[in-house]
Length: 354
Image (tube, rainbow, N blue to C red; front, top):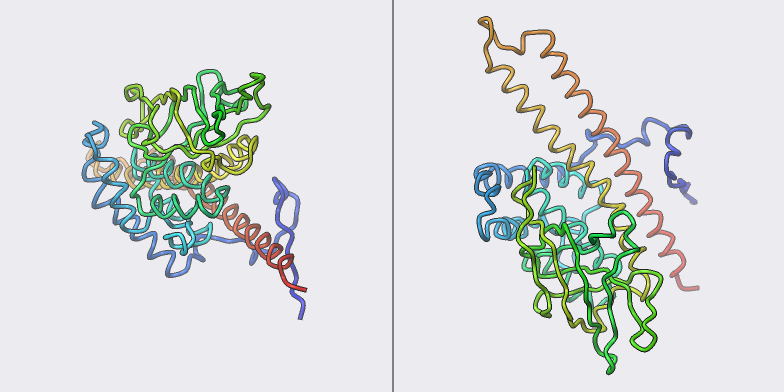
């Protein structure tokens, strides 16, 4: 019997397309396994992060990498990584739920999000079989830490204007990368960098119109770092400038195809945008909890300030906005999961033997 295939939502189409209530995912629909994974993530924060926030903000040497190691041992770094590559192979909604919970992890949430998102996904989504088998299992366990090198002093939103160059050696076995990247999260302890650069023809000096992407190991050499940036917030996350000086990268570490780097960059950042909403949701819920606790403990005029109308209004607004963010984030997350499933089904159909 034929089953109805639902067309995936496009952009803001949800505003004008009529939707049935049963088709809209809500957090109350999380299954038992998802709730158990979320509880594990919460217990990790309670035991390992919230108890040492001052040490994290002081950027104690080796502390953040050790926390990522512990998260890797629990499987939190491999939620979306396929099982055959050492991960849990869970769906996008589960990934977003973990993102939400760990979003309350202060600076740790930044390091973890950079590692599991922009650090891991370029290789997971665009790497060939050999690259995925070589790097993804180590990223899923935390044995290797990852970062993403796109932004430059003169290339932020206009990422394709970056000046970092890659030149193929005469023997055709390596690319030599030279350039500067800035505001690189996890840069201080990363083992693997996804680096975006334009390939230059060594004979003509002509550079490609579009970026290419490379998987660069710290051990390749030619990599130097500036001191840690001093930030207003998220003080405990590593943020550095990274310099590539005649960094020698094997040709097999070209990620995807030549000139495909800009596509990789924007697609990975698109995923990062909804994950940032999930992380912000986790932080917002934690703030609501702290606000209610404080309002019940703080006494003025002989009674808790939570008894006053103005404070109640503020707390109600916090809860309302958090609820709206939660509803929108997980509705969108489920729509994305359905789109993924539809694409996978289409691929299976086209690959079916005649």
